Image (cartoon, rainbow, N blue to C red; front, side, top):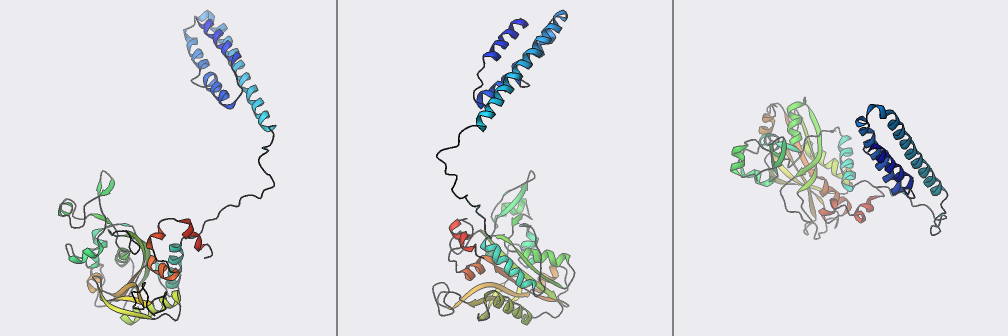
Amino acid sequence: MMQESIAALTAEITKAELNNPAALDAFRISYLGRKGRLADLFDQLKTVPNEEKRAVGQQLNALKQQAQARFDEAQQAAEAAADNAPANPDFDYTLPPVPNALGTRHPLSLVREEMLRVFARIGFAVAEGPEIEDDWHNFTALNFPENHPARDMQDTFFVESRAGGLVDAAAENDSTHQSTNPLPHLLRTHTSTVQVRVMENEPLPIRRVMPGRVFRNEAISARAHMMFHQVEGIFIDEGVSFADLKQTVYYFVQELFGADINIRFRPSFFPFTEPSAEIDITCLICKGAGCNICKYSGWVEIGGCGMVDPAVLENAGIDPEKYSGYAWGMGIERIAMLKYQIKDLRLFTENDMRFLRQFEAL
């Protein structure tokens, strides 16, 4: 029986056509592979009577050498044929090569780095933190008590831990979610969370800027998005006043937009600062004359600011009787839109090459 199998396999190997790469690969797998037909015959050698094993083994070794020789010969012939193949007559070898296309910096990255450079010149170092936060750092420590209506200003996406993973949970006002997980994790709504972490862990005085990505549960439009970027800052020391805050903002705006830009502070409300103000600058489109971008007021808002609320200092373990501080926050997208006169917020995330290539010169 074994002799018949060897004879049949010898005939197949001798007649096999190895005239293309696919046939070569099939031959190698079928006859020379670890699970090929030759390997099966070697496995069956243990069933051969002892007096015949030596002769059968020699036949199998000879057959394996024959198969390997056929494969090597055909492979060398195929490689030689490929080397001697005539050039493609349809290809013009005198054509210049296609240049490699180099990428460019994203406009948000350009504006972010420019903003950080301005603040670095007046002593502000960068601090960063996690994008998935807890309720304490995102709301409670910043004077947003649980169930307080001020939380409606920053509705976000909550997550809860299940089997080691993060899954989408309920909305902010879902009592069922709050009862099953009283301290849910969430996608941060502002980089003020990093301010809390810095105040909790770093020695005074504190002078930091916090860039990063934030999230809010908003409908996507030309003026709003569920994901955007911020640069916030905080300065805490003895004797810090609103005058210090105004001078910092004046310096930043004039360094970034030019010395001829006017600035105004509008009284506003933020839970974590008191007093608070919105920061407006001269509309860069109409130069203050009035247009549809600034709603014909001549002013556009670039961020919010204020003196750090004493309750926030206490929550971070800082004595508000001894220390005071100011904080501000600005959207990088808003600054980029004003600086480069971009009218649709969605362009920053759509990856349209026609839009991105406009910033190659920068």
